[in-house]
Image 1 (cartoon, rainbow, N blue to C red):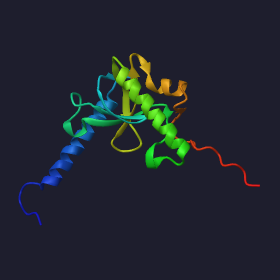
Image 2: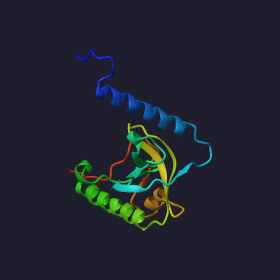
Image 3: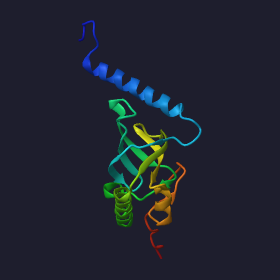
Image 4: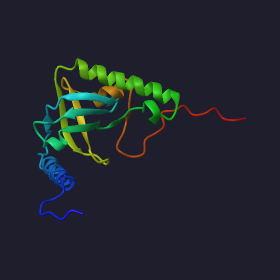
Length: 162
């Protein structure tokens, strides 16, 4: 039982995290209606439509490492999240495409970040050398248009049973 005058260390971390989250929310909500671009370096490609960025200069340390889900596109899952082998292979290909695009980009901008429906992740456009990565994924068949609703299957339909 804690009886001291100060807060327990875990409570202090929770308060700092909450304050940082409120600060990020305020900065995202206060963004002008025109495009807000951030030069946050991509530190890791998670999959075809999600990257991890370092927003350290613009955010409190508790929120500096952000997952960014690409706006307007859905790519197949890879690994154990894939529902079939075809999706797993397509997910690996989409991830490799995103990795190559990010590695080959001279400039990377995170455009118009906004909180996503899943905690700890933002939705944004990733602009590589002036071009949308989402658009490139769609054009090459590595992704499908996505507006945030129910995602379609990436697995081929089973042959009808006769």
